[in-house]
Length: 107
Image (cartoon, rainbow, N blue to C red):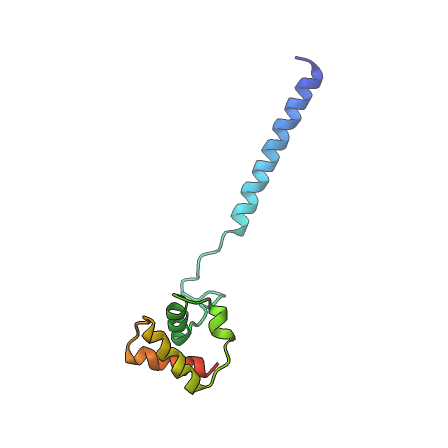
């Protein structure tokens, strides 16, 4: 084997080892640290509005959420809309119905 081939193989192997070691080091450096014993951590869980979750889950069965949230309607118009959706197959309890109308009217 010529010196040039040997040198090329050696450099390729060395570079592979260096890059592999660097990748392993950077992976472990970005791993999240465990929470402290008190259970607190620096990033609190986002607060999720249950009314928004209900609207998202029910309305997205048939519509894009952009269509829902881009609509500007009065409370009476939302009542009419949700009533129409119920006649088209939307299944909601009385409490869910009120929550959905209240949430959308408050947008």
